[in-house]
Length: 315
Image (cartoon, rainbow, N blue to C red):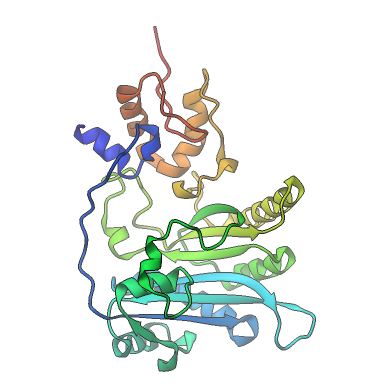
């Protein structure tokens, strides 16, 4: 295979380079007991200060803990007929609940976590928890190839380099109330992600990122009109977030396959079209991926609307 091709398919989108039949994965050890929690806080429950504090600590927590935060809009429990902002904090900790409550109270006291919020389980049971299976679901359900639910969806992404100030958060909260259907998830980086050099793998989003942001909208209505409605709502929140995220380029996460960033028609301008989205996904690694693609697939047989292009042919 060669080192270059192996490098390319471990983060550069394997479908651009061939058909990957199998991967050999090195497992890591996990403790016999892990701890999870899912708690929510609304705007009326000090949400502004909690979200602001979260941005200060989420990427700096010990490697054993991951705290995801999702912002959405729900019915207010204190103002009848009105909507309010909500944050859901979903967490996995590689350790027991006593260590976790101590850690959270020390590093993120604004969340107000209680011991009763925590649940200890095995790591494989935590996979069910994170996938929203009901408590007590047998772990062999993970072998099922039948989706839990079928729904339409749109995803977009961003990278957060600096905490959003409180004034900015207030702006975002108001815009989300207007849009209502769009969720905004903060996936914190730091830890091992920040230790890997950006050129070690094609995936370049390493040190310097507080979080990857996901814009998510799901809907059950069928038809083009419904799709356009919800996709446009997602695009609006993405546009509102422009002042707060990475710039030049506005970076993006490959796995969401956001065709709003550009489409390759695989014609004479393939390289230029590919660079539009490719630099957002891969930054300085893009041209190395193009060089490898040109070498192993010069006819561009393995392609899709956002694949790695080949360099232009010169006579």
